[in-house]
Length: 315
Length: 184
Image 1 (tube, each protein chain N blue to C red):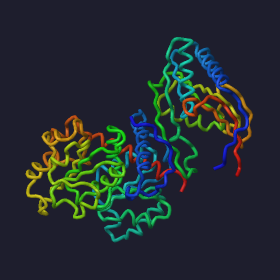
Image 2: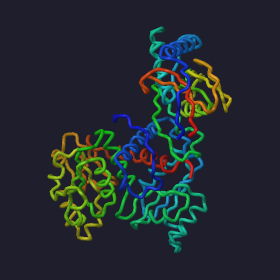
Image 3: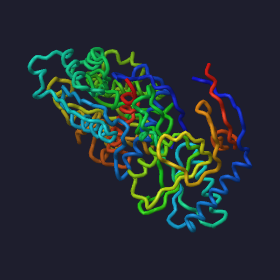
Image 4: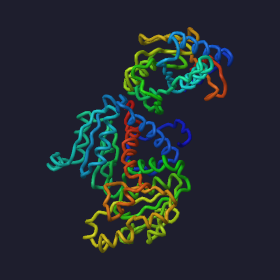
């Protein structure tokens, strides 16, 4: 287990992105998540720390895992939870985001967890709220900070300090907010980040991200400590970004052959939900190196830590 | 932040060691042995004091009683008034506390609010048959109906003072001092 981490002054309230966070802040949060995970192991998985705080989970895009993960974290901290999803909401009736913000505040929301298909929506909402904070649960292709944080947390628990470790991110980087946030996070922790995937799924400015790019997945995972598979949306095939699912799997899917090229015992990670036989073979997803289900558990712990540090206390 | 200025030394390393030894003996005496006993130290210094009590009981009774640590941060009643959230630590108690006699250990008892939070945290972990409290220093000014069952020393203090129990494990030396808050 990692060495002792000391108290720092926490400066973040709303969390839209982890760009600009320091290594020290990231490790402090990961360490707090470790203690939050301690609460998850108890017979009564509940602590009273956010009693009286109202959390609104505002989801404009479908998501089950992220929403449920946030909801569990909120409930374990004793917050009051309201789920507000777009279907049947007033957005369909033409309410502007600004009016939504004011409505939330009039209802007494303290913490708004928001997912939206448009880049910048959580940032905009945060700018219109006077009192409540916003935690970004994914906005368009921009950022998914809590996913990146739970990925770093999972890796840190296994590998200790991550400086100098190599992570290969394989798949559709272009459309992935997870990839973008992970690149920022793992680089801040001093990791060597290498991307791989079809050139049609790489951002044009791939060289400006400050990480390597290997078209060949076998080269990308060479000596990697972590192999991170990104979800391939099957619809992308219709967009002509890759010829067929089989061909994608042959070139970039993670099977045992590919995994052998990484370091022995390298971690296999995936943000879920997984497409078996596309970006990951079942033998790898269910294999001994897979930490995919652990990532799910980490997600609750990291969200508890974030809710506590950003959303607790006086306003 | 007001600066702390050391005013009086209450105990040196030897005094502190004697006090812990006496508390350890009293606990065993009142418990009529070491049966069903669990020592639980409150983060942070209470944890180290509890471990020393455990060691002393082992020396005299030849039994290593279970010893755990309790973090009360998530149970504090003043969190909604703080602008900065205090750091959370883990709670680790080596066995189920239900039906056991819990000896809570802390360095100083002051308002009693830490102990209240500790009691709430304990209840979430199980139903002990009884809970007793051991502290090194009772400095008065209680705000809740809570008292220490085992106490090293009663020290009348003013509210502007701070009592610091320093432990080798965290502070590099064993001693107890009274400090004065410099309102500068």
